[in-house]
Length: 487
Ligand code: FAD
Ligand code: NAI
Image (cartoon, rainbow, N blue to C red; front, side, top):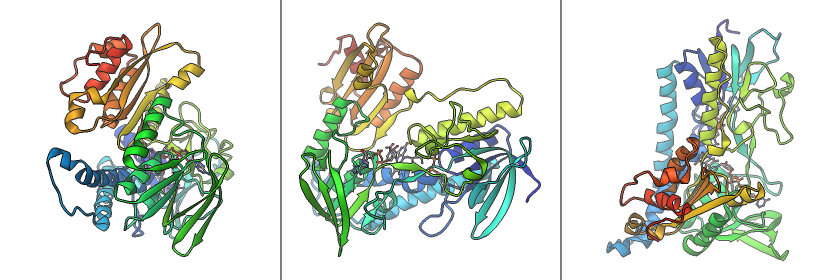
């Protein structure tokens, strides 16, 4: 055991953990970050799910496949002809891998720059010898282990794909997110179990590249987390324009492998037996918190019935000086939520170490944006109409379509709309829902408005550049007071 006692040990170097470690270091805390991720070449790779097999690689492939789709289907409308357009999937995958490597190596540089000690291996929290003693963490790598000590621990061990009982992931024919991001050719027939965020994003990538994509979803309605009107519009565009075959309300009976084919036996929403035969099957039915090998049992670290580490609004666990952030705790499984929690915990530890009395701020989940990077993109923040109705809150609606916006027309991307929901009496913005081009960027203005408790009329008073997509948000805000100008 080393005698050095770190101020903070972070277990996990995903967007929750690596950001927490950097923020700790910025605040003058002596921080170590332990991570066990290895890339396909067996090399340590920082950044967790997000950088290695999540946010960044999926967006790289979405961009590439969208470019291919545009050249094939939209270029001619601009008078541009491109003959014999083809796609070289290994080149596309290599580009994605290069982006991933650049970013994962970038985190190693950030650690170096900020003097965060980086350790590769599995971190296991050892039983504490006494209330006042430092935490000991065993770091195991290739059957070798070392014990380090820290006053505070931040657990940021993330999540893993939820398995389906019917079939094992082999990442050859039955794929999880990692396999779906690494195919070296376009499958002719692709099945996807789960019409959630991964199913829609990955389904879109391979559909645009030419696969016939069938998505099977257990829930009766499509995209139930989204505003109903947005979900309805999305389903219509994804089926009619993108060409995704989406079947909701299904129940899987069995999944079997036969030669090179995957056979899914399921009942459709009318309870009629159906067979889906595909070349590859992506399983994307949610993710589960990852506490494997962390030593939770020895320490009686409390987890809830679904395995999430239990924390309060400040990410404190039941163990003194042990915090948990990101996918391994309650709340949305989003990279920016994980990072925000990491920063908040680092600042809280600084307050404790420096003897400040401040409690720090709890993260407000109501202003965390959601984005689905399909085409058109979907984004929202705050409450949707069904939530406001269920809560009995009276509200006003302003809505504006992209088809009436000059910039969207010039781009040839006219599907979708923006909807602003504001309190009936106070006019305070309660939620903003978007489907359309680049709404992943436009949503930030709505987040800022809500964070600063803006009313719809505050947004209406702001000058928006012309012509720009942001005018759709402006017009939707004007629409709350029935004074949209261009419709
Ligand atoms: P993770 O990123 O999962 O990192 C946890 C790290 O801890 C891993 O490196 C793991 O190996 C390591 N670890 C676990 N246990 C131990 C241990 N005992 N010792 C040492 N190391 C350990 N979110 C978005 O906001 N936007 C997106 O566009 C987006 N796209 C996504 C696309 C896909 C395909 C997937 C799968 C997810 C996507 N997400 C997206 C979700 C996002 O990736 C997660 O919310 C985010 O990575 C969670 O961060 P985290 O730090 O909590 O955990
Ligand atoms: P998800 O929770 O978004 O969707 C899973 C879907 O599978 C749900 O619609 C669910 O009803 C369905 N399902 C569950 N069991 C099923 C079964 N037996 N048969 C058929 N359907 C079934 O989970 P997903 O897509 O796996 O993604 C995990 C998480 O990763 C997301 O919730 C999100 O937090 C994060 N993520 C975020 C992205 C983003 O921000 N753009 C992109 C990708 C993932």
